[in-house]
Image (cartoon, rainbow, N blue to C red; front, side, top):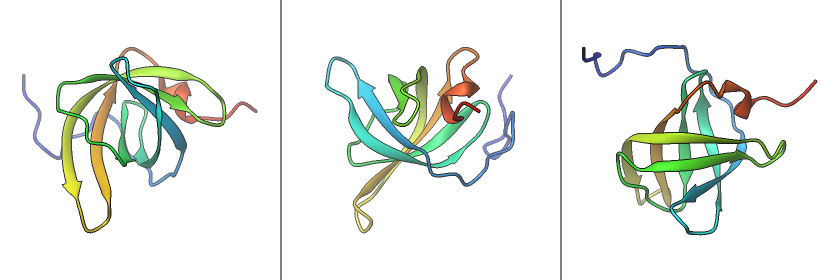
Length: 100
């Protein structure tokens, strides 16, 4: 079954969360979310990440890690950022939230 391009499993919210992303064996690099959902996020990054890559995402504040798959990407050279759409692998929505 394929989903429509704009179909989402859960709503997205425009929330900036400071994160670190780790690709392969490279050291983590700082990034930030542009929006988040229970199932994924838009990541604004200084580095490009190829579609289908499996990456690790860490909430920079809580230090919680989650694994994610890159489902799309786009480069915006005028903004100096790469936009990376990811879906979380497994049940890991807690990566975006801070403890009470």
